[in-house]
Image (cartoon, rainbow, N blue to C red; front, side):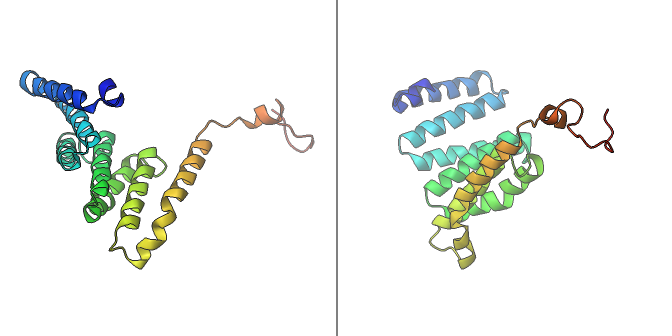
Length: 185
C-alpha cells in the first residue's frame, strides 16, 4: 500500500498481483486474505485509470463476500459500497442504484443501524447515483442536496454518540436541587 499511496501504482500493481498469485497458489483456503489482495489490485487498477478492470474485481470480491460471509456482514457491505462507487464513476447509475437501494442499504440498516458511518455513506452513494443520472425523475431531483444533509446528520450522530456526563457531574454530588421537596440520595 505504501507504493500505491506514494504515487507509484504501477509498481504496487505488480507487487499486489504477485502477492495475489502466491496467496491463490499456496494458501487457497485463506479466502479473506485473497479478497483483500484482490481489493488492493482493484484499487491499483483504478489509480491507473483502468476502471473497467477494477470494477470486475470489485464485483468478484463482493460476490465472494456475500457467498462466504452473508449480506449483513460489515465487510460484505463495504465491498458492495466500493463496487457501487466504481459503478457511479463509470456512469452505471442504474446498476449502482439497484445495488445500493435493493441490497446494501437494507442489510446495512438491519445489521449496522441507520447512524453507522457505512450506512450513511451508502445513503450518500445512492443520492449521488440519483443526482448524477440524466434519466432521473422529478422525485430523484429533490435528493440532490442529500449528501450535504447526510454529512450534517453524520456530524450530529458523532456528537450525540459521545458519552454524556451524568446529572451529578453537571450539577453537583447531591443532585443539584435546592428544593426541599426533592429527596437527596
